[in-house]
Image (cartoon, rainbow, N blue to C red; front, side, top):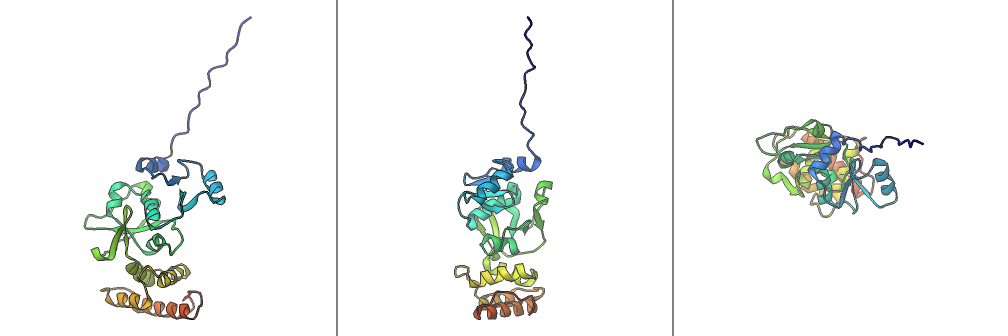
Length: 224
């Protein structure tokens, strides 16, 4: 009798995608996990539905409630080390860092300093790069990234982010006790920023939101 042996079966892992390799090479702290790298997207969604993981941004999840530092760290996982040094998160992405807006699909940022910001293809897929100049007093470091200060974030959102998402973020920031963004303070900052486009419209918007909050109404200036 002849014994027939089937050929050895070789188990090969699927090659790591370019995006997963990008996240893997940047490394994640133990309290953040990345769907597609540490577990599948389906597993991450299931654990999030059970309250065992908390969505942070895109495919990044945490095992603790988010805070500004954890959100900034999750955002930093999308950027190479050099980009982290040069980027400033701003506008609605900065509002999200402070817990006042939903997670962004694209991270909004500009460059810090004179060297500019060059993004690779993986970064470009998740980053919206604008050309905006800030002074060193208008940004602070949170975790591994620079973020516009709460006050400058309010100024930017009031001037440039029209619509309900901007209104909701502004209303949340205006009434957040720890951010120092009282309506009169934001109006003073709007008056002080040189060459600010849409200044008067932004001032009217802050006044309308302030009045709505005073009357206990939802923050919405879309019809004002």
